[in-house]
Amino acid sequence: MLKRVLPNLIYALLVAGILMVMDKSYALSNHYFIFNLTFKEFCYKLAPIALLISFIPKQRWRFLFLSLILLASLFEYIHFSYFGKNITAMEFGLIGGNGGEILDAMKSMKAMMVVPLLIVLGGGVALWSIEKIFAPKLFHYPKWYLVMGGFFLFLILQINYVLHMKLKDHHHAVLNSESKLLYPVYHRHSSRNFFVVLNYYLWGVMPKQILHADQTQDVREVPKLVHDTNATIVLVIGESLRADKFSLADNPLTPNLQTLQKDPNFFANTILSAGTITKVSVSTLINHTNTPNPMPQIFSQKINLFGLAKEAGYHTAFISAQTRDQLKIIRDFLGLKYIDEYYARDDFSKEIQPGGYDDDLLKMVQKRQLLHPKSLVVLQMRGSHEPYDADYPKSFAKTNSDYDNSVLLSDSVLYHLIQMLKKEVKGEFIFLYASDHGELLGERGKRGHGQFEPEVYHVPFVSYLHLNHQREMMQHIHDIKCHFDMGSVILRALGYDEALHFNDDRNITILNADLEEFSGYGIALERNGTITQILKRAF
Image (cartoon, rainbow, N blue to C red; front, top):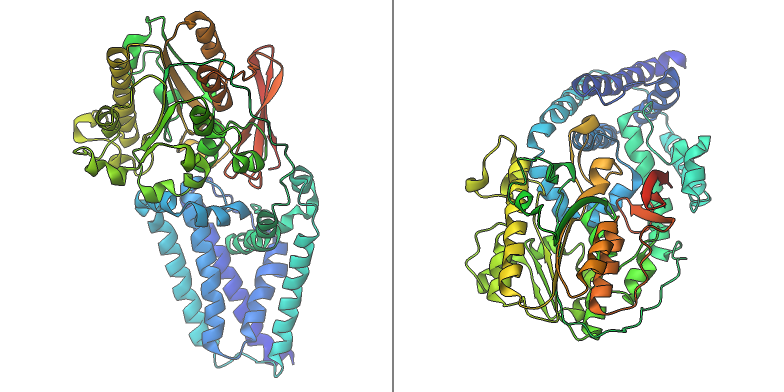
């Protein structure tokens, strides 16, 4: 019997060896990718899986299984090349909800795909060669379906484990040694990491999302409207602009805004974002939430900034330099029924001669004559989103970095918008800007956003005020620590009795890449008016 299955054993060892060589090859090309496959992983995981495949009688079915393994490794390599980390379960859900952002990012990832593609193609050729050599020699168990039945039984047991995990306590699960069945680990083969977290997403995360099992947060009541105000309120939401790149401390990327530093009505600082992707940060900012699971509050729209502005008698507008397709990830959370004028980039040509960049927002504001009393105008920039070379005109190509050139354009747009407000608004106005999140530019081998890193959750904040109660509001502006605080200031400007907790001992929530804490979140501890530390939760 041993002699009959010997070709299968050799086949399995060679296949497992090729898979190991693939990971080793990628590790040599990316020193952040840790290659530390253990003897146990090889002998008890990779080789047995390959042995099971060898018993399949049809060659096309064997190679189908091998192809799926190759594709899983390819996705892991490409993901790691860009993000500097393995794929996690939540990202399978994000792929469906953020397809536009992913496609944009992939345009700048072409060079990063070369090495992963070469490695996987090389592995594919090697596996096909083994197939051609061993196909006539492989022993096929007469009742091979029993072997596959055993494999599927193992899969069912894994699914059962996930379904019975205490999924509400992610922090405990991460510390639990059994969490290896849920999360990617560095000593597991890339393809196994892929299928493990896919399994977790399908049977652990997705049902929870569908059933909304975590919606336990209370919905805050609407603040009372106590004053009739008449201001022009402009909120500008940036895109992927990190705080250090927008510093006003002798920064060559902010030449325009630096000229305003001596103006007592102007203030700039670094604050905390509400989330690490656009969907999360914009949704929580517009709906004024500060909890680990903001979905109940968002769905209630009780404290939607546009809704409360309408209640206070304000004219509302939302203008985005992003396309309707790009806006689909936040559209349902904005409160469209409360927005009087809604324009995406696709609509600009009906109103102006668009140039294709963020300065089109200035043209739209002027054309629609939005800077009148009792108006709330929210502008969303394209900012510094990938691909960076599409975010600025040639006239701003003043550095060797596409990202830095996009920052230069943001500096110019914000400066000219402030000048426009000073010139055209005769009464009170308040201007607030903050980026939705920052961006990783290669730090620790990571790029992009959607990752809980300081470069992503620290964002620039800029303000300019002209109000009757200037001194009081300016003090509030100086105390802003996060997106939530910006919403509080806007509600006060609209005339609501929104309680301000600036400088109180409090916790500030920083969500990661989803609105239901599946991808984890952070808690910033503010004590005596200072952020003392930022703690990770549910990672």
